[in-house]
Image 1 (cartoon, rainbow, N blue to C red):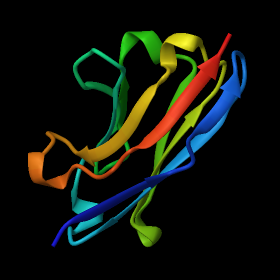
Image 2 (image 1 turned 45 degrees about the horizontal axis):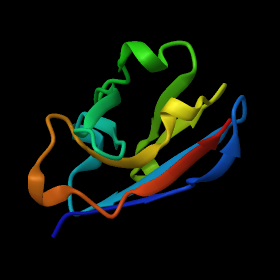
Image 3 (image 1 turned 120 degrees about the vertical axis):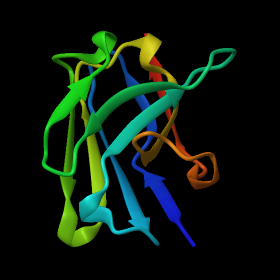
Image 4 (image 1 turned 90 degrees about the vertical axis):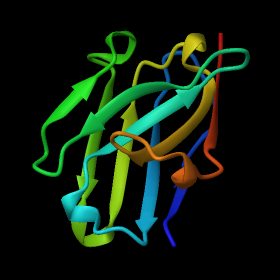
Length: 115
């Protein structure tokens, strides 16, 4: 049974930083490309960043230069360092493999950025 558990969200002022973590179980983590996704109120879920099993990274344009995705295979954990946060980054953040599998979505972690 696959389980992805996100943590690290919270309320932060614009310009602040947060570090999200996602611990995975039930998958061969080191073999999987992983992604961070977010869903803002009234919007579709979107890919924010992804990292391949080999460590290559890609970012959505709105977060380039501000967010950094990384992974620690020994801990089956993927991270998202978010700097220079903006109110438009407010959303529920999820991790999943890439491409995402519907059954793998977890509860997500809420990020709220105040102006």
